[in-house]
Length: 200
Image 1 (tube, rainbow, N blue to C red):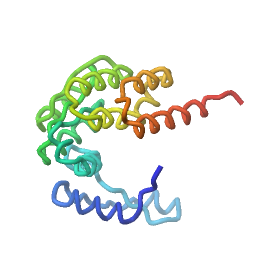
Image 2 (cartoon, rainbow, N blue to C red):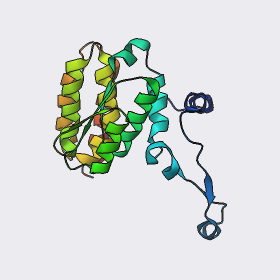
Image 3 (cartoon, rainbow, N blue to C red):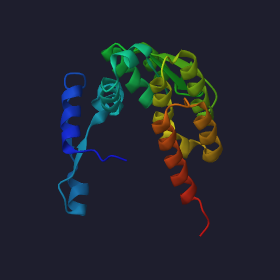
Image 4 (cartoon, one colour):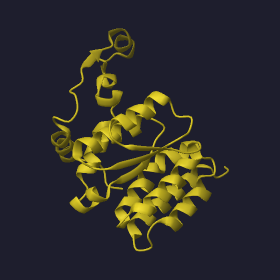
């Protein structure tokens, strides 16, 4: 895994500049005094869509090629990332399809659609990744679109699905055979999760 550098952060700052709010830093004096530090909170509740999620989504979409942007993106979220990606995609002229659980908060579904994305309601947490992969396979004209859905899902799978191994094996079978990098990243993630649950 390549570590993020200060140059990466500066470049991302330039990419998102003008596309997100510059949210305030709020002091937390009492808690800071208890910890012996000057403590500040970044008030991202005042950000576009109400969370920090548009920052990463805009930076990711910016890294795609013109052809990849033309294909659009497919991902999954229960709410905050859905709205963040929908806003980012709209701001950058990219079509976004986002799979959300059927029980997702109605306001978040409405916000995702209001920002211009297609919100597909389907099942519960563990069902989102397979559905997103299915949709990606239907519309993808190259491997990158499918991989965006897979790699975006990795952290969520670990929390939402105790049968991570079985699901990841099925995802590996779905990824384009020619895309060795994506398969290696999925395999590395699966190996890390397996190592954490090995008995002492």
